[in-house]
Length: 200
Image 1: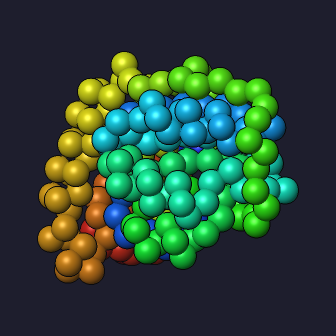
Image 2 (image 1 turned 180 degrees about the vertical axis):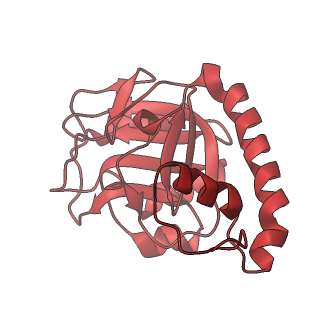
């Protein structure tokens, strides 16, 4: 896993979020923002899914608003990620439905136009396929290929274990692994004037 699975930070929470969303992607591409196509994609979602919309960075109107936030929250959808504009952050916040979008706009989208549902799409510089795992919070958005999800879960579990082990060091206000770091810096010829390894 590397940066190629990280969605552009230009796509961000529509309102301050509490917590994190994660779930399999249902994808939709609407190059002209056709709302009927988005609504058809919404009908394909199941509880726990994340709807991912490629609206081609359109910023002249919103392809998502408060009514559909409420409907998808009631449906059990985990959230929506939009490479385009959304609106009504207060309404999304009121029903606690996570919306991530590139920007906000007030205008309404056209109902008709071209589009594709549940095909590989681009979103924020990342290819998203139906069923890929989308994880999003205030830190950003990542997309995990479905075939790599188990491997990533194992790595995350290992990382959490390592973080737990260093908590006592942090609680003491110490820098983790500093003795090893200072030894490596000295080996590189770096001028080290003391440190917690106890050497001058």
